[in-house]
Image 1: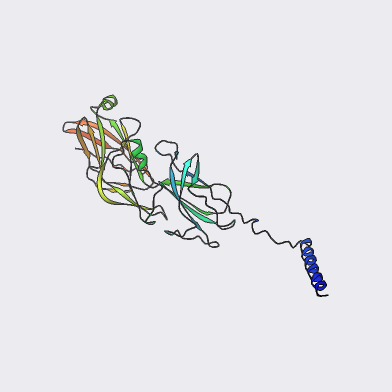
Image 2: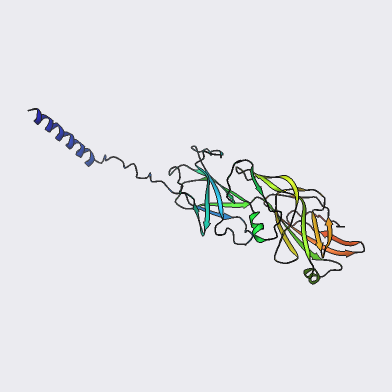
Length: 301
């Protein structure tokens, strides 16, 4: 009698379970709409780099991702962010060292990217040094620093686009023939350009991209920029003292221009330097910066 009672009870329980499923109250699969959504990246430069083709194979950036709390953005921290300094390497597409995912399918996030990748020990004062000798393309490229942020990005299966901008300044010196010189004569001469009185060490705030110069001043040798009459260097943004900033050596003789200049982050300064012979030596006149239209003319003695 007891066994019949228990058998009936089990049958009723089974029928009840079948009835609930048939009425459309089936349990929700916890994996549906909960599969992790991978984060992919499309990091581009706002302007071309030394090769004029943007990022190159094996270039590596660092990426931080900070989640929103509701509609409020989070603050980038040295650690404990959703993604902490993940290295992405470029080979036609960007590949992370490890797969990373969105928190879920609704939470927005801020993305912070910088180049070149490094072991960051101080988020607000990340140290970087430009090369003093930038006379080779490799050294010039190693002196580049880029930074970008994409804010309020919603979860997506598409690659997140981040535009990285130049943090440093670019100084282009164009040597032009004046009185007593010709372009052909200058091209046949031994010309060496030196930038003096510049700090080569930088402290970069990775939360904002702000940069400041630090350390001692050192002479810098720029890269030949397509011809013997043009040179360029990447410098840390700063104000250079009026003490022989531009030194132009022509066939072993130095001609010095003392002029105070301020270099700002993300700016390129093109300095046309006209070299003219005078009774006392060389007269070097400096035309205006292309960006600010201020006349920085002067005489080098």
